[in-house]
Length: 495
Image 1 (tube, rainbow, N blue to C red):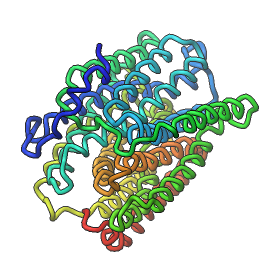
Image 2: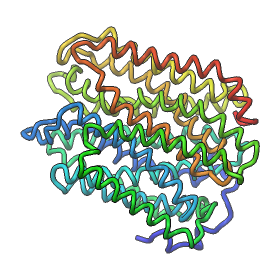
Image 3: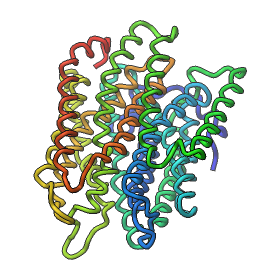
Image 4: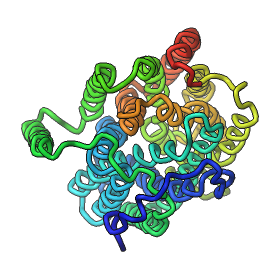
């Protein structure tokens, strides 16, 4: 297997041409990015589909017997750290390696992380595995998305449709992953499920390496290279940060139960710093600065959305395990299979949404209105839990939860692929990949909050939780809709 460094000549060809329509009317290079992201999501969602159960199941069931609140905090913190790590991946791409090489080495980290979960026992495997997967996934996600954006010119009308097709690839992996790891965990054990995730990432890494030449130089160079004289300082900062984390963990300042709260705090600080650095930079133009300002309310709306959506892996995962009637003709299907409901809806509807945006062209709703609608729909989805609340074990029908997750899907398609596209369009030239990382910071904040919020969920009294969460999300949607004219003005020509 070759590494990116072995084929420098192949990475310095001319950029992808606008008339390249070799992959469903999109640039052929999209096929490779589509594929590697699909396999990464296979491994990511496959592992995450069984992670919560591994943490709180008893030892006799193959789990670690961690209490529920701590388990959801770990899952939320892990999900947040994945997206928080996009800062690292974006910075390395923009300042050191370029997006292409950063993506490759990130995929290697992910594969070794899943291997660690599969072969290392207990909390050691969880600690090593989740750290490697989180850091690797952050690097891969930010750079794959950035590279998709680089396939298109600023005014190429195919961009949103291309991101929707890319997003379909993500969800093919997200659909198949939990199905296979869920069966492996149910029939063999948790480590077999984690092993399947490792195999999936290995396949993705192989495919990416074989077809890397078709990228034709996309992401080959760092747009804002770090001077060699500054590298020792940044290495010292990285080592110092690792030492600080180790000390805080050993002294008990960082605990498993508080992990999601810590990630929430770190993400908020990181986002504020990121916005401040971009807005104060002398290397961006007045138009670029206006566009960055317009992204602030969109960032908040995105974080609010993901704080509900990512509860699929915390509150809803527990709900599927304890409250959902999973009996099908006398056979109880694995709880992890619930994680495949949303991806299969995405597979069905992503193409429809892509065609709809393409058909509407300049007549489609503006991005702020799409964000507003996404939050409102998510709020309605949580309110839909109310009619099936208050029952005991196995009381909630699968069809009801599937309907709720269908609303999740519509909301996701209004915000997530559109948000990825928006970040690339609003990005200042010298902060291209890091702007994508900033969008993922909103996902990090929401994901970590999805580990904190379920602490207020009371299985014995569910309705107040669903009312509060659903109502708050609808309110966010209304506020963004009211602000949309101002946001559109600050976007300075970007829709």
